[in-house]
Picture (cartoon, rainbow over the protein chains, first blue to last red):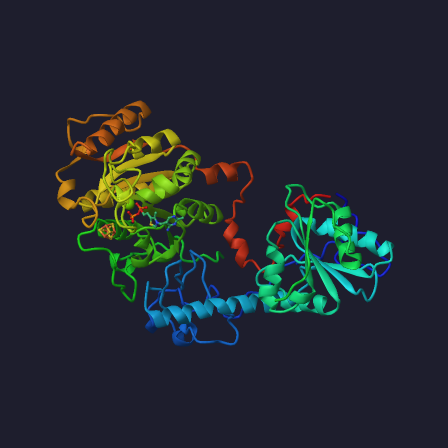
Length: 261
Length: 311
Ligand SMILES: Cc1ncc(C[n+]2csc(CCOP(=O)(O)OP(=O)(O)O)c2C)c(N)n1
Ligand code: SF4
Ligand SMILES: [Mg+2]
């Protein structure tokens, strides 16, 4: 398999050089301001069991209600630090950290945890992307969406198709959860039709895209391969040509035309 | 200055400091042996003057796994059978922490059996308490790796075809450097053994007989118990691997014959721990790894950059 076209941002000329690795962070990112410091009073939070009387403004910290800044994450201290005790546990617990099967508490805690997904996505969207766009030509009408180990193969196929005059680009999705909704939406909105290339028999990735975005079903075709061997670039080329001219795809693959959501 | 300022604080610690400020209602059944472990552990930690904030109590899943919900210290309630890998990592990252791992017989000798063997073999410096009630308690009384052959339960309706494992022998052959058995019915001995185990530098395994009156035996079935160190019939040298092995086999066999033998079975004080070995060869820093977390000037490596990605 060639990886020559792997790149984070393709240039319009389709240059196949690798991008420089992103600069390393030179120091640890600053912890959120609500993290305990070594000098602070005992921090309190959803899983820190301290008596509220001894820990200052505990009620705001212990609250399971929405806070603007916390993203559902409870502040924590590290074992050995004075002024904070922390129990990490899978048992449902009250804000004080005690096991509880109370249904109202359960709902509040679960909803707090769900807020983490949004917060993580928001934070990731503010950073360099994890998705890989391969765009050898501008204004492509066709897209190929893929994930995982066939990404390099798909990019090689996109290069071949572009060289043959097809207006096609690809997006390799590396973050599956929380799903990069905005990026995938932008990609799919920018094309007329897309081919989802994946190595399984039940179009799991296409299903995930539809579940996460709730639309685009009518423009998502599938190219599946499940004979135990990885994709060849030629198979992706042929699968793509099936959209254009209706020819049979490679016999080692299965083409499933777009249906709906 | 260390960020872990609770460590080595050297002060008088009272037993009650190990009881959470807002005391929870324990969900253990009345008469459960697990209360005995909690009591002995609180006593041992106070006796040793450990600050609750320099202690990390890592538990598995089961009735026993709830121990750190009722014990005031840092805690990590892990997943089934995995208390040891988490405890090992914590101890390696911060060797000055007092790390105690605890869980059930199903948790530690069954699903986590591989971790038990290899943590003993590598001699990680920690105390490992196995609450041995000879069944799965939390899930309602199924046959466990220590249930006797012929044990009838929902999972073995015609009686278990399996011979029980030998927990003490397994610890010894795997490489544990301290091996003891105590019982919830003997809280004084339990506390003494816990103190020794915590002070031991290396992997200290305690098979802790905890009665489960709800699904298995009640407290009466663990008495009378015999302390092998206090009874002249059981004269053996616990620093001798061969003598220890023989005594352990006898102890394991006799439990199923109604004779409850407890005490210290093996002690090898001088074997270096895994952390010591790793620091010796320079694979772990002398300064605890965990300190880097609080070092604003530390140059962080991305683990991605340490990988040799395919070219
Ligand atoms: C991976 C996994 N498998 C199974 C279970 C179900 N389970 C919960 S506790 C338990 C056994 C508990 O027995 P033991 O470890 O002896 O603890 P005890 O309750 O007796 O203290 C099992 C099988 C689980 N929680 N996770
Ligand atoms: S079921 Fe058994 S082990 Fe669990 S709390 Fe009750 S008595 Fe203890
Ligand atoms: Mg058990």
